[in-house]
Length: 169
Length: 169
Length: 169
Image (cartoon, rainbow over all chains, first blue to last red; front, side):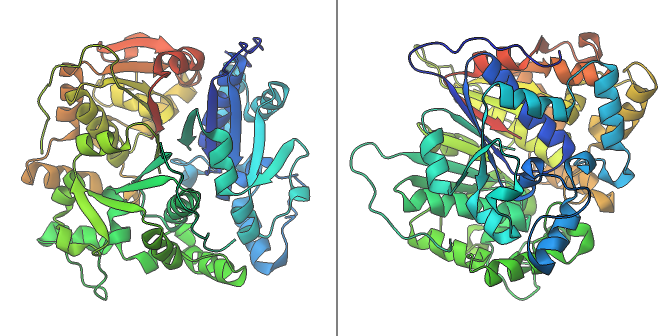
């Protein structure tokens, strides 16, 4: 368990896995980064396209201040919360599950979400942000961690993910 | 941003994107139609297979009256609501997010869901309804907008989406 | 409708469908098994990789007792509930939908979830459990129904699902 080690990518035609990370829920973000690092570790080219609530995972955190512009942007920012407060999709109503999850992950020596994000960067997983969702939520490239490679529209993402598998999470 | 313009499909082997639209949430419907129109605009053959809650997106709206048959069908219809009342998956409890989303989309000059549905039709995105889910919910083909091309079972959908990518949304 | 009949798989290169079953919601489990049995019935090789909440679908049920180890495991087990109590993702707050769904499925002569699971086994759908999620939740292979073929990590799952379509549900 834990963070997988890097294995050199095979020469020739590289296998490809692309993930559309739509959800900002803690459990789904964990699934996204587990799949991404697991695939990258065995030599896949991996692309993650963050959109809608998923954009929250790549934002630069500034305490509880939101980096988006305008009142509605601020409202959405408030509702989206930060990575450390990411809700668990099914158990959010209890308000305790992300903490339990983290605790379980630590106790069992499984990588936590922050560690998986770190591993993704080291394994050269490509992180992209969705242009349209950024536009709606009033976000700019400078609002994201610098590891975000580029801002893309749907057409460009479809092109670069062509020839591999794509999952919507 | 906004609705993409049509670009002629390439001759020869056409790329294909198929979307299983399971969710009736406003944000996921937006993602479905954004992906569909974005792909169709750059020449992909696009198929959307509406099932379960996703069926709500293609129903003919008749005020608040539900078109399904029987008491339980009516109950489900009531719970499913209409496109204009589609909940946002994460923020539904606030009851205000679809309105904010629409407002943000309008203000930012991004296509609204209704406009994306229109664009999908113009871009010849193929809309299909899931036979089994219709059966469960007491719906018939006549309950849907006339742009719905056909009612399909799983096997037929798998066959027509073969050779391309398929996403479950 | 109902459970599809078996059709012999074509010789030569068999089509492949792999499903990552992340959700434990009744409606999404129904979608998972409907897709799996529908594909297997027309000759696809079908693999289901159960992870996170999806693991609940393949657990041996022992009344309301949870088979996981430790206090936190028990807490999660309690929150996850059993297959018969699987929540419906959108309508869970009403607490009545799974029952209505089942009733509708029976009344309309559509296969219920338990019947679909049975059909999956008969159609030789391959059931796998996610090693990392089991580790987090304190589950062991002996906690699952004996039809679960193997416990896999991400890399092994990616390998066996290569060359076909993969959906995240």
